[in-house]
Length: 418
Image 1 (tube, rainbow, N blue to C red):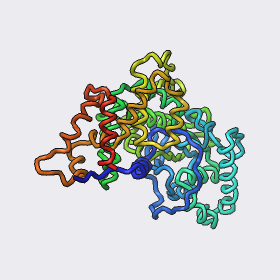
Image 2 (cartoon, rainbow, N blue to C red; image 1 turned 180 degrees about the vertical axis):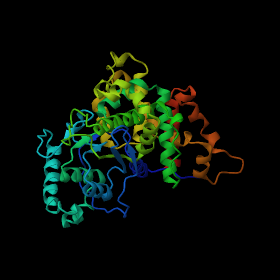
Image 3 (cartoon, rainbow, N blue to C red; image 1 turned 135 degrees about the horizontal axis):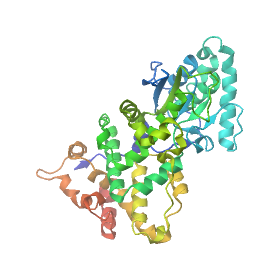
Image 4 (tube, rainbow, N blue to C red; image 1 turned 180 degrees about the horizontal axis):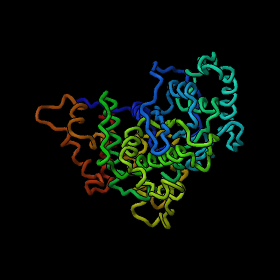
């Protein structure tokens, strides 16, 4: 029998291709030296703002990969504002609608360094402002050395457009995710992440977007944030965002929104259906975005050490996120939620061990995908039956998620799977 396992490195690469679904604020990464393949200089799609006619040009970005077409479009089209899902540092990501411009004082040293550097690049590109910014030799040099989001930052700062953080603060997302999702919800989210990773590993397209089938974790970690992004964009369309008044004497003609490519189907669905207004609440959508319940962090658990489900849910949440986010995001979650109480540590560690095993990932896959991965079984043997005990341990099936016996069994099987 042969089982094609998804290596950890491949899993991280797959999650980067799908976008990092949780991270809403991060310091820019070091420049990348690889180049992207040529792509038409156009947004993935555009949305029309009612009443004002302003256009929201939406770009999907693959986080941490070079995509110069986004910055190139900004430099050529010069939108009135550039909205980004990923903030340029902790201060920029502290509130939905926060604005960053050249000359702003930034306390975080890493963010301040990148802001100075990107603004200096923008000053050099200004030599070509009467024509085409992208004709600058400097642009030819930097477009293969920075990732797509960094080039969007540079483009916005070069043309004088405010760089607007469109997402909600990441701490709010982590806190809402943990407060609102049960162990079964995290287990189901883990299964969907494992399925998406293995589909990518096999070269299969992502599953079709189905808003009616979103799980609880996707609603909090993806859909709510997409509603916030559209709320910020809609206020900018009316030139009504308090943090970013545009000196235009009216509504802007166009703005750009740069978000992870995994958000594109949700953004389009929420806008076309108008559901983003309901999610934000009508008053927040039209007037005070800060009043939206989606931007409110829940109260911290009063006594997590005495909550029997706390360690279980923390372990399942971490296991789910390990399949779809970076180590930096996981570290942010730990800082935000705080350390696991000593009384809950054994449960947390046990869940991590069971859900960190390749077999648990395989146990969560649909039958058709599992059959593609497992070959060479003896006639009449079903690997789905072999995985049945693990499936029975899943909280979504009423199971406990881990046990000492299951941990020992998985340890004994490691030599078969490595």
